[in-house]
Length: 425
Ligand code: GDP
Ligand code: IMO
Ligand code: MG
Image (cartoon, rainbow, N blue to C red):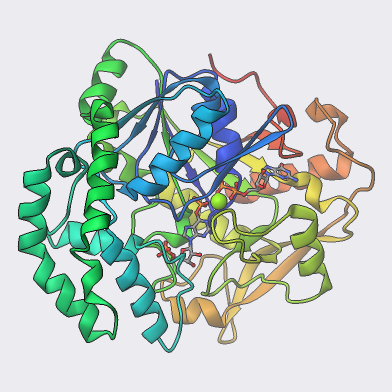
């Protein structure tokens, strides 16, 4: 069975929690895009793990893979491996030889470019965009190169001068490009990771042929996709489900399920349009209740009402076969609860987001009110035990999106999840 899981909004939907849960039934969990801009939280037995590169199946001891569509900062990965292993979590991790390496100069360029922008994107400053630029420009350092000092040197001699010029032109420090201690450190990490280097496409295809289960883990969310998101306020990778096949080297006919993770409201970190944003006390309340602070940067996330207009587009972009709804508990005590069911754009009512980001920024939400509920729902174990108005809310979202919500999450812990049907074994 091959399942792809993606974020259906602007990231931070709770993908880490849902992947951890699903991992019980999978043999392999594989990341297919993004880098350490991602921050996926898994809470097990009261202990919180914040994962940036290691796939969220780590706590179930699954085979973990990092695919070649990922941009990988070896320092971050090494630190994460060390931190997890020091807690007794043994990692069976493979990294594709073609995985793009984020070099210190990518981080330098990311910072310089963002600083120079009049209108900021709000990047995580992890060098993500510039690492992907180099992949497309065919000027990348790959994981395999870190295990081969002569190859790395040759590549840096070829790529280096243009990078030094680009950094100097932007007023930065060009010595970062071929700074010997950085190169030595990267090579040292390469040596330590050498035995983990693999061919991800081959592993996955063989696993599927042998009837093993593979779960592809997306990072970020649909509206941060570099093609379909709110350009320019997006990340630099392809975050929607279709990209998993291309990035992992698996044929599209192999896909069995596409799971979307969607929050019971909406959040965004960084700049860019978000029609249902609440800039008032209610937005602050959602942020505090939901702990809506970036896992990677600690920045406050912008919060707002559930946007079913964007939600529908996300269903189109990803072809979801089911949804996991997270953070329903955060809405407890809020009455009424609003759902955005349309936009007003330049005097017209529309039910689907405009393709242009500038137009999306002008959209005014049209809301429908739903009655709220009181009383703690964070320990509810069965769907029928949720308050009726909470079930009405879930079912209204289901109607609006046209996709079954198969799991409802009512807290960060692994056990705080209500499955409406038994998860597929
Ligand atoms: P990801 O990037 O999609 O994996 O999401 P993050 O981990 O960045 O952010 C989600 C946050 O919400 C994390 O702190 C989770 O522990 C937490 N979380 C996940 N599901 C729930 C839930 O149902 N209720 C509450 N209160 N918190 C949750
Ligand atoms: P997870 O996987 C939320 C946002 C940044 C910024 C924009 C571009 O945890 O859901 P980048 O550094 O990628 O060039 O920044 O994208 N962003 C995220 N927002 N969750 C994420 O990942 C994000 N990864 C990037 O805040 O607005
Ligand atoms: Mg996150």
